[in-house]
Length: 292
Image (cartoon, rainbow, N blue to C red; front, side, top):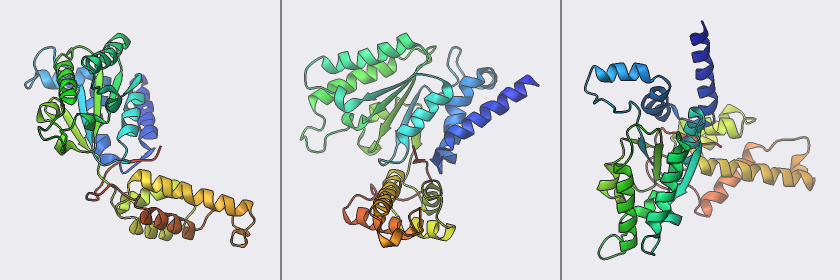
């Protein structure tokens, strides 16, 4: 019937959006179960929660989510995908530019963003660089006073979230261990974005270097241990540009070859590693990678 058709179309849209990320199955499942599906099917979630322990008036979806993981691992892209799937405006709040040494300025900046979101109604706020509120390792007393004031403002705003409001807040951090416990405890859900393992790196290369034979893709994936999804994107783009330049200059190696061979990708990878630009450290594990 009509409902089945709508559900199928909705699933197809979800698959298309998530298709821009490689290795996103675990993160996709967590976010769909906690955010996308509760907002699309609130009656089902409400029925389950009413029968267990839910308080009246408590929304069935997660309203505040913390994305954790190294740079280049898909945190921003995933937030954008969620806003698109939910059909909501996407507001980016770079905390680095909000935190101010001037008394009261951070409070006004944060208030302006939250008030704008409230006026919009249904929206997704993405707080990037929440590490700006991390404890300073250099300061003898721990946190700087300006940072402490900004953190206090943010905590009050999180505590004052209207249970009936449909604003979704997503924050991203590269250093969750350095964040104040009072802040991390305010988030209802934490999602980890690790560096890609070999199979995920291979999936990324299948999208970015689709013309290469599977054996070459596997070899490049094995050689790129420690690379983030953004690293692999940059490596592939560098190889493409280098090869295109060689074609323009009509260098002999390009004769009869329209697309770059695996050796171009290996060279670009080696150059990036030699310049210390590869990877953000940490343990490789299955996770979604930024392919946007």
